[in-house]
Image (cartoon, rainbow, N blue to C red):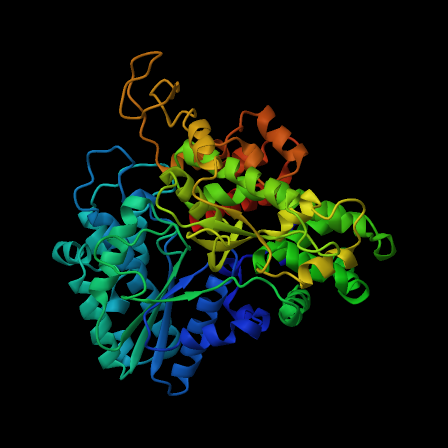
Length: 589
C-alpha cells in the first residue's frame, strides 16, 4: 500500500494531471507572479510546492500561447549536473565549461519542447536552430549515470547532434544561448519568455552554485524573466548575483493556519480522484477524510504545512493500516505514522539539502536540534492554563561560532526550523534575534503536552500557536561553545584507505595517505541499501546475492536483478523505482 500515488512528487506527475491536482488556495498569488516579467527567487524547503507551481505555470502559459497569448513559459530542472564538474579535490576545475554548457543545453532543450507544444507545424519552428539541434544528445554527452566518469569532448557526437565545434564552445559561455532566446522571442512575436529554472542551485555542488547564478544573470535581457527555485538559508549565489536585488525573493512555506486547512483537504481529494488504482488504500483515505477530519488537520500540522510532508505522512499511515478495514482505523495508527516519519526526518532531510557535507556540521545540527527540543519540552507555561512554548528566538549575534550558525541555517533549509521573523531578546537584552518555529512534528513526537493527549487537545495546541511566548537562546548561552567543542571531535574526511581523518588537508595518522576526494554521487552510491524504500524481505534477497550498496543495485542490469530468486518482474519494478526515487530525491533536494 505504500506505493499509492499519493507519494508522487510533482516532477514525476504526468503533465496532463497538473491542473487536476493543483490546489491554488493560498498559493494563487505566487502562481500569478510566475507568469510576470519579474525575476524571482522562489525560496522554499523540499516538498513545499516549488515544482508544482512552476510546472503548472509553464503548462498554462503554453496553452495560452496556443490561443494567441504572448507569454511563453519554459520549465527545466537541474538535477543531474554532477558529471559535468570535476569531483572535489580535482585539479581540473579551470572553467567549469562543461557544466555551463549543460545548463545552457537544458534551457534550450526545454525551450524546444515548449515551442513544439505551441508551434509544432509552424515553419518558424521547423526552420529554427533550436529545433534542428538534438539537445538531448548534447545533454547525454555531458552527463554520466552518476558514476563519476570524466566525459571527454566527443566532436563526432556534437556534430551529429547539429552543433559545430565553435557552437559547442559558445555553449560553454552565454552569448549563444542569449542570442537564441532573443531570436526566438522576436521570431514568434512573443512579449515575454519566462524561464522557470527548477531544482536550481540548491541541488548543485557549492562550487557550481556561483557559476550557475553568474550564467543566469548573463542571460538577463529584454523580454526575458527568470524564476529560480532555491533553498532558504543555504544557497550560495556567488559574487556576481545579488540576493534580493537581481531577483525578488518570494517565499513558500508559511506555517499552517486554521483558515488554510481546506486547501490541504482539497489537495488530498484531488489526489484520490486522479488515482487510477482504487482499492483498499483509496477507501481508507476517503474514510479518514470523511469520518476523522480532525486527524487530517493534525497530520497537516505535523507536516508543518508542507504538501509533500503531508503526502509522506498519509503514505506511512497507509502502511500502518496495511490489511485493515475502515472500521479498524484508530488514532493510534495516526500517532504511530507521525512518530515514524519524524524519527526519520533529520536523517532524510538534512543530508539532502547540501551535498558532501562536513560531518562536523551534521553533528552540530543534531546537537542543536536535541537542545532545541529539550528547551521546548522544558519551557515554562506563560499562564497556569496555557500551553507550552513552540517558538525559539535565536540570537543574530556574530559572536556565536560559525559552525553553530551554519547548523541553524541547515535546519531552516531542512524544514526543521521555520523562519518567522525578527524578535527582541528579553526585556533587559539589547540583542536582536530571529524567531523560528520548531517543526510541530517534533513537538508531537516528544509529546510536549505530557500524558495521554487526544487529537482534539493537540489541535487546540496547534490552532493557538503564538510567537508572543517563546524560549530565547542568547549569545552568552553556553550551548554554542559546547556544540562547537563536541562537533569538532568528529572526523571531517577519510583517507584513500578509508581511515577517518580530522583534517582533510593533512595526512592520515594511520597510514600517511591523503584524503580521498569524494563527490556527492559517490557519497550516495556508496550508501548501504538500507536507505532504499524497500521491504526487508527484498533487501535481504539483494544482500544475499551481493547487492549491498546503492551503487551495486543501480549498476546491475534488469536481468541480473530478475535472476535473484523470489524477485521476479513485479519486485524488479519495485527495486528500480526505489533506486530511482533515492537518486532523484538526493539530487533534487
